[in-house]
Amino acid sequence: MHLTEEQIAIINSTGNIKINAVAGSGKTTTIIEYARARPSTARILYLAFNKSVRLEASKKFADKGLSNVKIETAHSLAYKHVVFAHGYKVRSQDYKTSEIVDILNLEVAGDKHAAYVVANHINKFIAYFCNSNKTRVDQLNYLDIVADTKAKAFVQSFYPYLQQQTRLLLDKMNKGTIEITHDFYLKKFQLSNPQLGYDYILFDEGQDASPAMLDIFLKQPATKVIVGDTHQQIYGWRFAVNSLEQANFKTFHLSTSFRFSQSIANLAIRLLRLKEQLGDYKPIGITGKGTSNAHKTKAVIGRTNLGLLLKAIEYVTERKQLSAIYFEGNISSYTYADEGTSLYDVLNLYNGKHHLVKDNLIKVMKDIQELEDYIEKTEDVQLAMMVEIVKEYGNEIPSIIQSIKDKHVANDEKEKASYIFSTVHRCKGMEYDEVHLVNDFITEKKLEKILAEGKSEETGKPKLNEEINLLYVAVTRAKTNIHIPETLMPVDFPPSLQIHIEKEIPDNDKKQIRTPHKKIILPLKKHNKENSNEKAATSIKETHTAAHKAWTKELDAALTAMYKKGNSLSDMATHFGRTKGAIIMRINKLELVEQYG
Image (cartoon, rainbow, N blue to C red):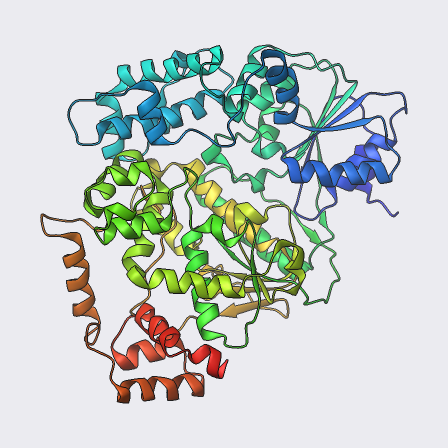
């Protein structure tokens, strides 16, 4: 194996060190060689970021015969030390908002559904505390992480009650009267000041570590190695801190990427230069030595679930030869929020079909307007995206999702997919031969506008920094080629054989997808006392003149003819004066895909 000078310097180092490694630079290989260079009697712990990385690392270390290296995640360590010792029962996911209302018997006077809003904030407050390095809830100010003005005003008015109920729920978990969460047992582990008993601890993906994880790591007497990429921090919403910057260790670098060519490396460098507008940024160099010419794996990567889902709809309806697709994390995960709310629950609320709503939170809402009011007071981004999908496609959603599911292959058949669809968070650590970016990332123009309008204080520069990181991570998943929308391209950056600029066809029907420098990823429409469904229908009538006219035999024949000729969905929607969703629904009704491919 040929090692670079940077890798050799790391392997021969002594004492505590931190390694800033660019995407595709072989950091796992470097860490394995570092471990191999230590005495075989040394007790070494490798801390992986998640279970999938742990399993992959276990195989790699075992293949090298390194039986003295123990592979764990922070949570697997905590589980063994806390859950087994106390006999706790662990939940598979966090508590739902409606469950917290019931457990704490929350009764809040004032705003409608105030108890549910308080419960939502209790959930976030607990996550904030459990991921922090603090010992008590009152050492944190929850208002520090609430950005939206309306949500902040609500929290301020109920703060003492919110803090009290947060402590009460934590106490119930501590006493074992209710199931504990994964965040809780990690926090309890951190508060116990554990001594792990290793000579060396190798901490991977350090840029996404929480303060609680970092606290456990830094307090160990072992020789410590923390590795990551400061520009791949994308879990700020889970209270991650850039641990590489917080660890006062000697710094080493891995600046050569074996994944992609210099053309893609130059694009990544140029995108990171957007950070110059946010303040102190030290330019980095990336040497691209990737030589792959393969085009086997093709991925479509989006910033948001909504952006990705809309792009999948476009691919399925406009690319008739597309026979198989795959969603990282499975397609179903894109139609459910973390709390378990289904896209179909929101659709049934929109249609006034309360008897079909299964989710307890959505059940208490009278209409979409009430749900939007709840979203504004809680900053619930996932629910906000669901509302936007429902407004865009309405009752066409079931047939649209079904058409996608019909083409979706199982996990063990992933290699058969023509395209793999994924958000940045789900594909972190992965690589694909060819990458197509969805146009829902932050752009240079949007960043300049935010700064020019003085909105960076409201948004927070750390969040803007993370938005740039998301674009950088997406671009650096590519090994051979990247297809990037023209609006995402840096100004005056030249195209190349590896970088393909995609010009978007103007489409007045396309809903603008905004990056999350606003209070909610996608702006919600304001309602007056009119029924929200009636307003939506009025809007559609105004924009699409034939939106509610019946389809005739003549229109069906014309649609069929355009479909067979390969006209785009945009062209057909414009021609018939209808929404894209209406065209999709009629195509499915006429079974044109089955007849003509």
